[in-house]
Image (cartoon, rainbow, N blue to C red):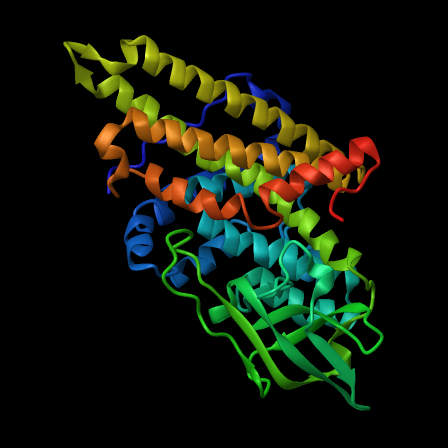
Length: 392
């Protein structure tokens, strides 16, 4: 693995818009990625294995529930800090950022926002410290973009609920201690349940043979007559809006995270172009390579501005689902295009594990699909601006 010489691009001096706390949080995450992620990530991606030894480090930099109040173990940071942490982690690897996103936005957030005080005190501090790891069960084998069609269900059995069904493409599931699972009650209403590892009938088989997110653990959630205590129901919100509210938080983090992957690809391509000599001069001195690099930094800068403004709106409680969808869609598309162009700058070297670009490119093929596909986010924007829902 080559030394991590990454220098973050900031063409529009966006650092001037950040508070000192923002910069301290970001720089701590950046240094941790350089020290603990980049030296090992290629090896774990090649092995298709999640590096569990990094969980403690993720907790130390505040990557688990950074916006959760301190009283529940979180860091009590704002939404821009959360975004910056996700940006830096995804600069290292999208799969590692997925682990942090799931823990923060899809497990800790619903427990904090929809749970009881007892649930918050029981689970959140252990999730924030990494003692517990969690996963989020919404997508099913036959219901992805249409989660309302889910068939996973639970029945009231007096002193407990009986849960049956299955979830697919679940990050963290193979090693998760708890799962926030979305299922329909006997009236067909969607509710969230906290399912704990060890409950009889609950299993989490791992998904293998992935070409993407290879350093992230992905699996299934299988529920075969699982007895769930009634106190594990999240009472604060039900209906499809409950899990979609979690996805808003996760998609917001992705909008920042994708910038990190793009910045890493750009920085790698720029450094390589300055060093690679062909026809007696660096390829950075040629027009076509300058075109590629100039377009990369332009698109990164636009994405940075989009994410920063969205962060301000999130802090004010004014960010809409449609605005978050726009940022997620735009920034992931930006990142995957930059990864492809950066790979071309490196020529044949771009496909090797000596550089990060091909790994980013493969990872982003998942990021552009999960938390709402590229096309679905386009239709969310379309419905918002026209008033007509094209989903049906």
